[in-house]
View 1 (cartoon, rainbow, N blue to C red):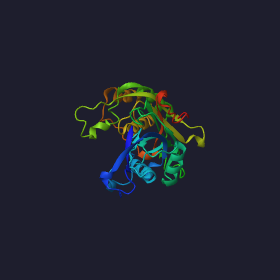
View 2 (tube, rainbow, N blue to C red):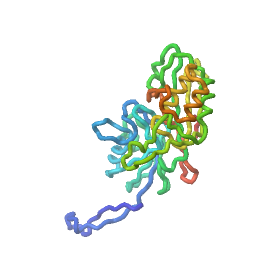
View 3 (cartoon, rainbow, N blue to C red):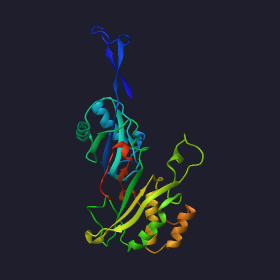
View 4 (cartoon, rainbow, N blue to C red):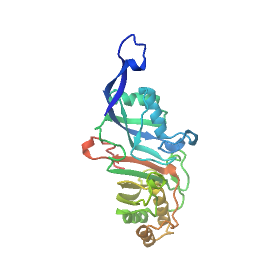
Length: 296
């Protein structure tokens, strides 16, 4: 993509518009790996200023302060208010030619300490952080102990009740594959006035598991999910329903029926956002973007 810039035709033209001619500068497509503490943000997606700060809004302001442009940041996952990320991917186009390393240093110098740029690189023009993604991975953390934790309170949901994690993990197997997940969320397009009509809730769940961490006296439970895409609120209500299975208030057969029938009226409720984290986004090899090589 080529972007216009203006130069004065004659040195003594005093900047009159009719005496200026456009020059064209090749636009760079920059991808970045972003980590953020979502506690004080009203989600990722830009909103009116009266709604409060968003991650996208802060990133765009930071880029603008460096390049003096009006950038548009696109993210792989539009996380809700209070949700964190350690593996979010964004991209933006700019005519301000800095090396990826310089972009990373410059952005980290102006961003608040609740947002960090973990890496930056030039990507093909066709790369789009959201639409090029092959899968996204989320982790929901539960602190399952008699006593709460102070240090992890911002990033985990405290549940002191006894939980059968093996039973929860067995229920996760029922989520795998391509199916209608309408029982646990709604299509993001439902609130988009430009996309009227029926909206699909079909997604392909590639991984789903619940595991108890060996360290920390086994108090931490991780609920991990990888899918091609997620519905709005899908992970949080899925975890809320899995907790009923873990407390043996919902049988595996009942959980299976909820999934099969895409029943929105089931008793599982959404857990709070602060336990949720976007941990990884994967892309086809052609884009040269390897966001996070760690297993979730």
